[in-house]
Amino acid sequence: MAAISNTNYQGEISGQGDLVKIRTVPDLVISDYSSGQTLVNQRPTSSVIELLIDKGKSWSAIVDDVIAVQTDIDMMNLWSTDASEKMKIAIDRDVLGVLGPLVAAANRGATAGRISANINLGVAGTPVALTKVNIIDFLVDANEVLQQQNIPESGRFAVLPFWAISLLKKSDLKDASMSGDGVSVMRNGRAGMIDGLTLYSSNNLPNVTDSGGQTGCSNIYVGHKNALTFASQLVKTETLRAESTFGDIMRGLQIFGYKMIDPTAMAYGYVYKG
Image (tube, rainbow, N blue to C red; front, side, top):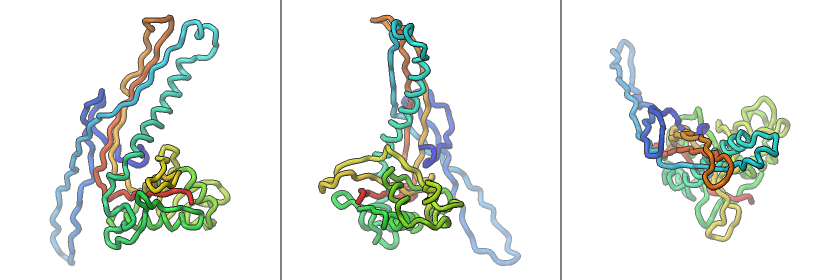
C-alpha cells in the first residue's frame, strides 16, 4: 500500500478511532506572462484531509511450555516475523478488494475516458479477456484514461495480478525502450515499466467468479499516489502467561485506515485471463 498511496500523515497512531491528518499537494494557478510584467505571488496552502483509523488486524498464539522446552527454535520470534508478513498481506487484500467502486465513474467500465468515453476497461457481466496479444494495449488505454483527467505523468503505477505479469513476459515486449529497463523483459525477467507505469504484481487482488459466469476475474488498478491515502501502525505486540494452561501467549494488533481522496487519479480494470 505504501508504494501506491499517499502516506504523508501527521500525528501519532495509538489505537482504533484515531484521526490522522494527511497533507495534500496544493493547487497552483498558471497565468499568462508578457515581458516586463509584474508577477503576483500566490500563497499556496496544502489542504489537510482527516483520515479515520477505523480498521484493525490481530493475531494471537500460545507456545506451550512443554513444546518450548523440547525445541531449540525460538518459536516466539519465528511466529512474530511470520505474523508481521501475513498482516501486510491481509491488509493489502482488504484494501485492494474494495477500491474499484471508489474510482471516478469516468475512469472505469465499458465507456471509460472523461473526454472520449470509448475505452473498455471491463464491467460486471462483461470483464475484458486479457491475452499476451492485447495486454499492452489494455495498459496503454488505462493510462490514457488518466491522461484525459490531466493526472501528473510522473509517479504513475499499475497493480496487476501475477498472471497478467506472466502474459507481459510472453507478449511481444522485446523492445527494452518500451519497458524502461536497460535490457528486454524477455531476458531479465522483470516487468519494469510500460508507458510510464511502474508495474506491481500482487497475489492479493480479488479472484472471483463474475455474475456472467466467468471464473478467475480480477482487478487491475492504474493510478497515481494522489488518488489514495493510507496510514497503518503496529500498535500492540505483547507476551503474557496463559491462564488456563502452561504456556506463553504472544499477540499483536495492527490498525489502519484508507480513503480515496482523488477518484480521478485512478483507473479501474475488471479482467480475466483469456
